[in-house]
Image (tube, rainbow, N blue to C red; front, side, top):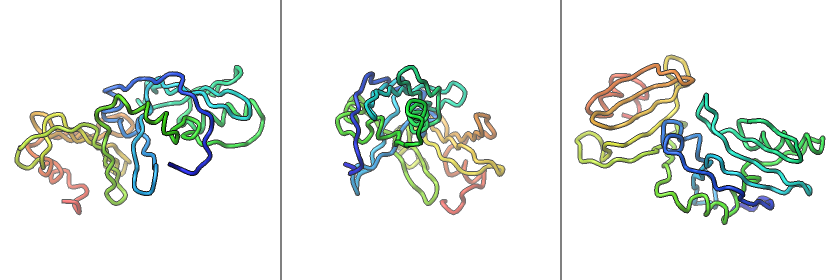
Length: 220
């Protein structure tokens, strides 16, 4: 485990795993790849409605994970002694917002540490009932997240089959966009920018789709 300072963190509510959020097209935002030693990086879920208490400087700070209904990304809220961070994009922003309201200083805390993501007991509890953890693959500067796996012997699908879903982020039409690749009856590729679908195509194999769009050719 990390040698960084650990705080007294109590799991108040375990929260839930949402099929749409944790395994859908925005899954990459609902899991935090955490490094536990030099050889092991495990994704830990931001479970929807998880709530933890962290004692800092003699005060109890309660942090809860919510769903941003517009972006479908996790958002974080921290409350202590009636002070409320409101919803923030990160746990770090939430805890530091409320802490500064309480103590009127600029002390900064790591959101992951305050949520107990470096605490073995809490991490074990968060993943104990999970049968599949998304696979994070680094390809040069591109992060591919495989959030669903289907198996088949279909030619040209490299063993993947119905139910498969993966995402990556790269540029399309000069915009940083989310590429969603899935397999059901056919192979599909959808491209989104800020929630708006910019592109859709279907074909018999993933290679044929990528040949059509002409992006990331060096990985053929």
